[in-house]
Image (tube, rainbow, N blue to C red; front, side, top):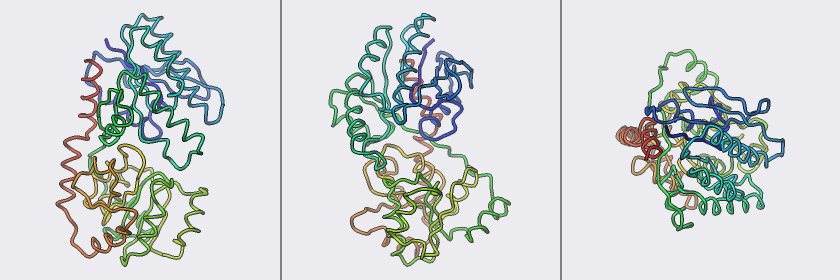
Length: 382
C-alpha cells in the first residue's frame, strides 16, 4: 500500500475552489486500491480527529490564530502529525504532497524528517502567488523566497500548467519538475431555456441568450477587471457584460467604480456570486463570448470551465493561458487596446461553433479528471 499525505488544502469535503476541488476529485476518481490518501483538514474546533471521506483518511488540525501566518503553522503542524502517524503505524516510503509554497521558507527541517522515515516530498507550487496584487511587498518577498527554497528541498515539483513548469525549470534549474494538468467537469448543463432558475435569473438581470459577454472569476486586480471594463465600454456592442463575482463589500469594487465610471454604462452588470453549477454552465453555454483576463497563476479553473462550455472565448494572451487554450480561442493583450476591437469584430460575426468544438475536444483529450487522476496514480505508484 502506498500512503499519500496531502498537506496544504483546507481539506475535505471541498467547500472552496482550487486545491480543495483537486483533492476532492483525486479521491472521488480513485481507481487503484493500492493507494491510501491521508488529507489534512483545517479546523477551528477539533484537533487530530480522524474521519473517512470517500475512502480517504481525513485528520483535523487546529492551528493557533496567527493572522496570515496561521496557514504556515497549519502546514507545519499537519506535517508533524503525519510524521507521528507514520512512525506509530510503521508506514513505509510515504509520499508527502504539499500544495502551495506557503511553508517554503521553513521546509528544510521537515524535508529532512520526511527523508529520514524513507519518504518523498512532492510540491505543487500553484501559480506565481508572489505576483498577486493583494499581497504587500514584504509578503511578496517572502513568497518568492519560499518558492525558491521549496524547489531546493522537494524531490519533485508538480506544475499544473506547462507555462509554470517552464518558469520553474528556468528560474530554478536544479529542480526536478513535471507537468500534470488540473482537470475540469465536461458534463453539459441539465438546464434549458424554459427552466425556472434560468428564466428567473435572466428576468432579474434583463438578459437574453447570446445577448451578453461573460466573466466568472475571483474579484481581484490581477484578473484585469479594470482593463476589461474599460475596453468593453469603448466597444460598440449593444450586448451586456455580465460579471459573476463576489464584489459586495469589496473596496476594490469602489476603486474600480471610481477608475472606470462603469455605473454610467447600463450594459455592465455585476450580478454577484452564483453557486448553482448548472446555472453557471448555462450562462457559459449561452454567452456570446467569454472574457478571461487572468494574468497570474497556472491553470485557472475558470478558463478550463469556459473552454469546456463556451463556443467563443476572448483570452488574455499570456503564456499560462496560451499553454492551455492553444488555438481554440481569440487572444487579446493589455497594451494595444485590442480587446475593444476584438469585441466589435466578434459582435458582428456569426458565432464560431468550430472554435467551441475545438476547445471541447482539447478539454476532453487532456483535462478530464479521470485522465488527471490516472496520471497521479501512475506517479504515486512508480
